[in-house]
Length: 229
Length: 221
Image (cartoon, rainbow over all chains, first blue to last red; front, side):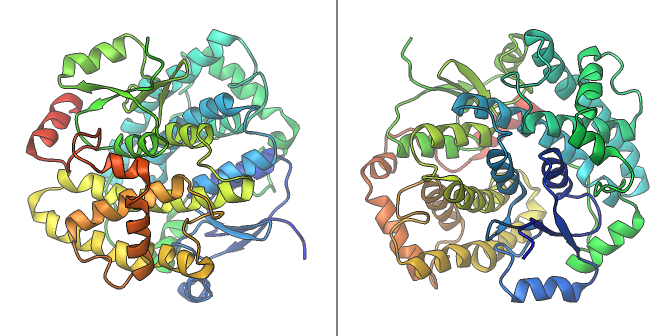
């Protein structure tokens, strides 16, 4: 019995990637089981492991947790990445809600048609530049501290770095015009656990490709067209 | 300055309704500002009160809170509706997130095109009866307690009650086959704060109608 959390998902980012980031940032080693076949998924279903018949699923501390947000909140609280009181937690929840919405625009990107991908890229850039990045830029500028909340490293910082890097993958100069975020990116990237996660050979997953899309569709029998939101 | 939480949203359910439910269930009085025009909304943005230019907005305890989940988590935490420890909180979070996925389908329903409505209604029925309600039926059956988590009233119970009523509005017989949920619904309806919220004249909003849809599209398009 390893005692390490075990992650059940596809071999790719999707909804599990934020969990990988947070565990890694907290310095927690974890195992992964990758869903490749429909049979594997049906076995999990029949075994009653998936509360709402869905992945992500994380076995942690005797629980079979599902629902990404629930899993992330549990990990954050357990590893002291959730602020020192209710009000700091409220701020962290707000900030994570924003980066979650932003990353949500990118989540279905690989499943879109080529034409929709171009439109969605423009949407991602527009939302990041005019709605999300300015909010975090202002937070950092206003308090002048290294971290988003309570002068302490938290889940919000991990999530924002993840979002920044994901958006930069779609357009590399996204942070021009956001000096606070540039400095933030450099600082958080150099935190030892995060630095390690950003190096080759870590459990961080690459940008999703067609093989990933194929696997998800096959395992979930999700063959309908995905439209951008 | 009343000290009461102040909710800013359209005059209808939408994403604010779970907040109204939770505050009401906790016995907390609140005020509401209703957005009727695009200008009102634009003024909020220009004044810098909407962190991500979006509503719901809840002014509470000196904070201008946005992001529905953040707001609900804060209220649950503050009013002891979030379990007694991390593991109970994890259960509550799992349950409310699942219910939120079901509620999302209902949220979007009025905005779907007429030709998609029947299909979407079928999806809601399918998910409710095959994915979500069986889970909570089983939870209640297995522990035999009155409440979903930790033998104590929590956010999860409020959220489930809201969802049951919302689905029943669309599919009246949806709880047949779920005796535990039927009993749960009765129990929740009799809790004093919830009973009050279910009476006419409470801040509870009616199902979305044409006027509500029109207002939302006008303001946010």
